[in-house]
Image (tube, rainbow over all chains, first blue to last red; front, top):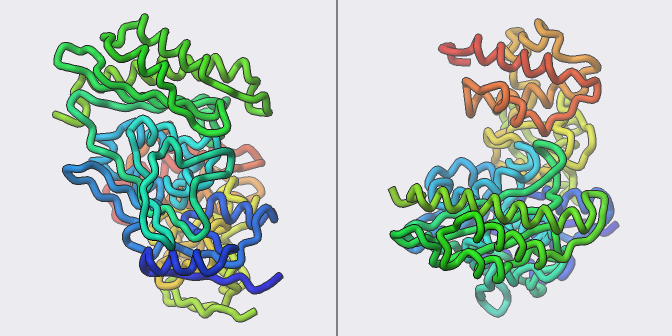
Length: 292
Length: 160
């Protein structure tokens, strides 16, 4: 084995230079996927580029525009952020479902995205919150909507030398709220059989004027379900609308059979979780979540 | 392969060690610094046996690279007691016989300390969720939970 390097860039520009100069270099954030892949021989990087000493990748900033979440900020730090929890309770829920407290002390939203597991809990929550991925690379910066960041299991739009710097989430409109649910056979510490995220916006009369629905672990990537969104928009989010959204989510699911569940079961569960998450998001929006 | 020289703080004392760039913090603690209280269970972040605090944050030492410790502060199981005085959690684990083979015990104690640092008065459910990442294959969970809750109760009002 050739010598593996350990690098600690202090700026995004320095990290990009390191990544661009060595195609075998891998970004090290929390290491909860990369170091397991390294230990089990799945990946043999030529260098670990530890991005946790770059302030932009570690900071969480909420301003009038919304949230700028550093890609390497740990799940534990995110979960402790009161303002983030208040404005995006569903996103916070998705972060707090990842692994154990130990894993949450290391794992990051950026890492969850870049690992590109179809079952990644945070991805659905980011999609329904209209998140943008801020990417830096040798040719400068670009932004990619989070729903097109992952292109398949373990694959993203990142080009050689590129680095996910942060995700940006716009501030929720009035009477807007999100929710995320997943199903696992245990109460904790497992990978989703299926997941669903929902965000809804209500008008003053309680009619849904905007909605986002995304389902996870039921296709090669987490997917947005516009048909489920259409079932919610224009309704008072009554039982009939929620059931139509559930049916749309089930029919949009393209699951596989594996050890975590059969395709048939997953398809059903994706709908059930969509209905329940929509009900939670609706209740939060009616309570004026984030806008007291 | 050239070794990296890492200067860090372990259990309130300055410490330094040499490590390979891809070595884990778990390996550096055990082999570099001789702190063998931190155990290796799965080595893939699933079992919690190697739990340590990194800048006060609960992490699995098997998923931290040793050079990441440079300039940071680490607390291991060896840092819980003060001299001969056991930490209340350690005392309660003894009183409740909250261990059998003992391999998982240091990880449970460090994780429980992190819990009580963050939440001095946890409910049983909060305690069970917090410790879900620590596996005990002797299946002693109930006594462990009782010991942690008893320690929390005893520690109320006393700064430890």
